[in-house]
Length: 237
Image: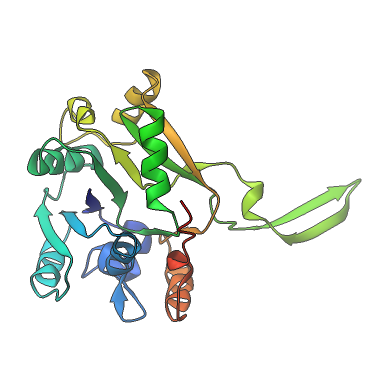
């Protein structure tokens, strides 16, 4: 299966890092988060990548041109103004009629991709999204009668489930991708939901986006570990 990575957004919430490069090229340790993301797939045998570029896309294209790896990596210009739905549509037209992975270029997870695909096949729907727990961003405070009864860190499991990317899409999804200006999340995913064609694969393990400078620094610290948490994957089938 080919892996489409959405890497064309502006990255405005981490503008300290994205004035001169797109967010997927922000370094964690000495390699861009894009490389760490591809390593998740490659470690499980998925090494055919199409990177959908846009904002400052030339930075990614130059990196790919000089990328020395056995992986098959192509950077595909999908336009600076194109939204996620349009980027996916252009990549699906470029790839042809086959099942694909799609994910965002700024989130890492230790997801078992073979289990994801197996779940998708069992569900027999057009698309599957990986549901994850959002990171605990704030401490939790509990009180009674004006007295604090608990003060501490909020647990990740206290939150609900959110869209964590790591989609599996069948070719039929392309018919729902109408134009370049439509975000995948508010258009096609809503249509898939209303027609009962979207499954949710729940991933309770590690997942971390890079939306803020604080999260970038946290991921950078983790990238120094001999085996970062996004590569600590339970490969039991």
